[in-house]
Length: 601
Image 1 (tube, rainbow, N blue to C red):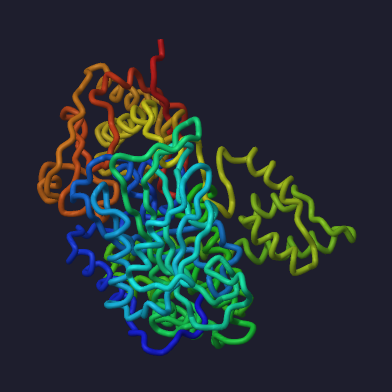
Image 2 (cartoon, helix red, strand yellow; image 1 turned 90 degrees about the horizontal axis):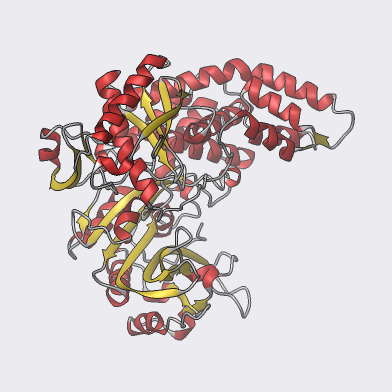
């Protein structure tokens, strides 16, 4: 994070910053949209929502947004690729992204003007404290001199404007093809001396901290690798709330801000130790991981052995491990979650609404892990002692720690490192993949298709998912609710709340219900309406809190009525047929169905 800042900035707390940003853009014609869930809806590209643009991809691709062409929000995000780095001054698992969008409306001039105006006149950052970057030109795309000229007109000197290539100043496309374009990144210059003649925003010496990124989607990348100018150009911007909060309040790290002060105070109370010296890293890990875990459970994720639930379990168990190293005993993590719920509920009311579920899941998982942790640690110590003097722990032993004692591989690697050993992770991964259909520890899970995959097959599967949801509610239990879904070009995966395995006869009935709806060739109709009218009409939504005042409702005859962003087929007959391939447990109280569509003659 930033070094101590220059004097004269206006300190703000987190809620003031959220409101200042959103109000600024609302005054300039932007509709405020609520944060989407951390669980992407029908998106196979990532386990979690990773950026503010993620839920808006259909609209960046040309679909009309119900609230218009100018949008603003504060999006909750999870990124899991750097979990092992958490504990330093800068890495976070959960973070908030302030963002504003132009969907075929304004472009570079207005976007940069808005950013400069907010930074200087609302946040109090002087233009002398800024540095910006622009695209240097590459692969036949010209140098973005327009962006540089706009910044110059706002008073930035030539030595505050830097040009970089594709690795630094280009976004997208999200898949193999799709919208993409150059960006301009905005940095805070904390005033420390340059580290050398080449020092600039791309340098990692600590002088510059990125605070905002404005992406100008002006090209479409085709399958042959060529770039075609877009007729309707978009702007997608993202500002990290935690990072800007540090700068505005003169803090060295986010852990010194009010976002973490209450959490760290609670850890001090529980542990009887102070946040200083050798304890700093452990405190940060526990604070970060349990903040992220609370938000995950607030959106319905439950600890499990794969997918989002595996990441959640990993965060909880890593936190438990570090608390135990501090000498903490007993079930205590619920108390830390409670601090997060109370602190963030004004901005994210779903936390308070789901607090009982959060506390119940956290307590249950902590109790389970405590039962196995001591036995697992004893077994691990014996394994390390019996390793015969070798420097590498065998993959099968590491897998036993996972399979028998619930130790994530990362925990085993940490334990081994404390003994001066490495782990044969390649062998572990082979065993791990054989044991599970799909899981990848420590990073976002990518699938074929990409964010822009609105192919004919995925569209059919999307509509089939709505029919499956309706079938389960009609045949099995009217209280069934979707707990997650994932669609690739080959199949759909649908998670739902239910506490037992479905009987073969029930699966047959569900499959027949969907196929009957397909044979009836029911029309799929999309309507835009006020959210209250949608609810009055009986529409259901996977994540109701994410929708704005005007919503899209997809109706399939009298079978299904759901809030959804699409895309869908025009009539159910296009799906041709539906077949359930597997029904299994996903997590405690959650079942999973995998199914395919097509002609099954």
